[in-house]
Amino acid sequence: MRYYRQEVLTQIESLIPHFIARFSEETSSEMHIQIYLEAGHYAPDGERLEEGWFSANVTVPHEHGYVDEGKIAEAAKALALYLRQNDAKQQLANFDF
Picture 1 (cartoon, helix red, strand yellow):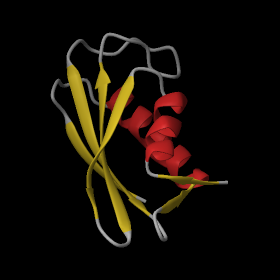
Picture 2 (picture 1 turned 180 degrees about the horizontal axis):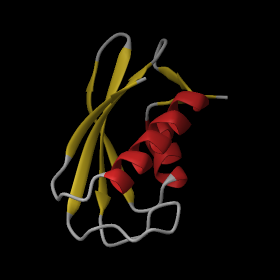
Picture 3 (picture 1 turned 60 degrees about the horizontal axis):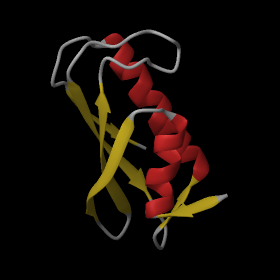
Picture 4 (picture 1 turned 90 degrees about the horizontal axis):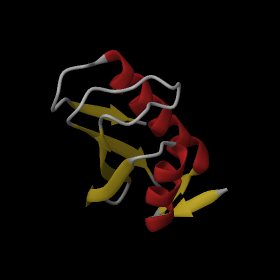
């Protein structure tokens, strides 16, 4: 299944609760999405995260504005893993898919 713009954000937010996603930039071949997690909530594996805000920039390839569902799931999983492994506040990470 393929998703377009707002559906990409909705999918990411549905895969990991408490994420807030927004597009920060878009080029002809990539969507740059900035995602925030309000820490203090629980990660998908049940681990409680540090208090504070975390952010990550996700670069997702797209074709004519459409993104494959697998890429969205990949991004969400990578973000969850990153947040579990990094407990410092105000972390910034970049993910390219």
